[in-house]
Image 1: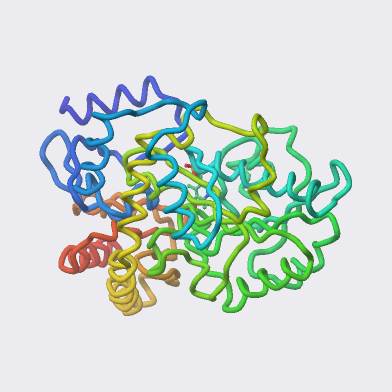
Image 2: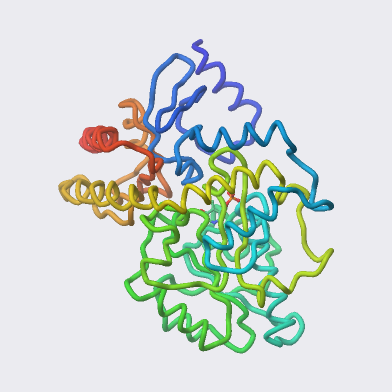
Length: 397
Ligand SMILES: *Cc1c(COP(=O)(O)O)cnc(C)c1O
């Protein structure tokens, strides 16, 4: 047995099978390249679902982490530390908001945003006790907690986990009339992915995000943008809502905020919203820890230059141009923005991702028939072109 076979057998035997990974083991990574125990190299076209937007072991981010490792890594929120104030103020500034509530995983930040909206609804909007509703969209993916999967429309994500958390209404993604009809005086928030990632990189119809913004304003409901996957440069702008010049009331951030090193997430909003929390009413032992804040500060500094957004814009335009030239007998449709594409196939995507792996390119199917392409934003044009050449070969089967 090769080292890869041995390691895969251990995973297979001793880990829960809640994932169906490609049959590869990664032992090292650098930039956009991954290496397995046998020394084979693979180009990463997934970037850990956009958590590795800045590339594997980005030198600026590992340097920030190493500096912080030698200073202080955890104090809990019982004490302030010297990375916390700078992190929350720098991230708030990047978002154009007043305040940040840092957490760890994306799902925790989504939960935090849901709690924020409910608390704001009761204490500021004046919704009667326990009557708040939050509107979500068909095809949504916001994480894996019991409450979050309660409003999932994906049977795999939801089935057998009841009883479900009440207080959510789900309408078709892209349907402003349905959203309007679902809203009432007790609607405290509308939770939306500006582009649905897990559903297959679904870009909403033009004008939809603006309609959501207007309906939320008219109804006095919070527009909550889950930018965990779409944000922080992935679509060619800092936030995907910018494509429609929309400013949500609440941003939910995660994934790339931790630079591919740590789970770092956050809810970002103005004082009239996040100000609802008083001591003891919400928290997290690791949320906003010194190591996370030091890495998050570097991420924010890197995004402030606009360099990564620009790369995503220009390389993304190139990628979409090339994907657009793939013949119709190979693919059905291409969706996405920036360095982010959902390639809709005529048949199953899994065999294509396995052939791609054999060709040295790692991309993962999402659902049955969609191949997702989301390389680190540091990818060079020649590497991108090589990956797209391999894709064409894999599609021809
Ligand atoms: C990945 C993701 C989440 C959940 O993040 P975790 O860190 O996996 O909990 C939530 N929302 C969106 C849009 C995501 O892509």
